[in-house]
Length: 102
Image: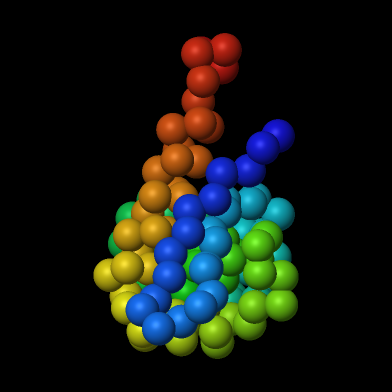
């Protein structure tokens, strides 16, 4: 299975941050951040859930990332990060149900 990544950068920062939906990382992140991330994806997401979901989506490409670093990225440019995170989630939802599943 080929993973789909969504990337974003910040002006003046040489790092390209890559996000990927990975179910195992979401499970691991739930333990770290202490909230149900799948339930939060359904709507009404708290700040804790946003940070946890970002953390989970960063882990595949950036395995050393810390939960606090995910929060720092949100603080740098919340709109940019939320847009990239939304793209990852939407692409996962679009591929979750295929015609073969129906």
